[in-house]
Image: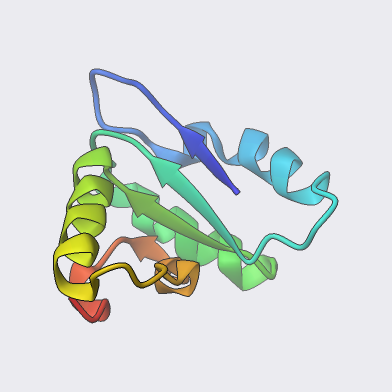
Length: 102
């Protein structure tokens, strides 16, 4: 499950966590990872991810559109037609490209 945030300032996850929690809790399927795609995130947003995952069975991944594009382009170059496993996005907090095999 995911949500896009278009903002001119860094996204503060705390400002949106109740909205995301509703999406997660009303989903027909279990939500293992909730991706938030935005231009930037506040440093406090990472702690909000940790706090949320401590009390719920869902991790929150903070990723920029630029990072998502880089993943897609790198995958295509190095994995010639292989299907991308969405499990690579099972990360909590800020996205870490080094955890992918790219």
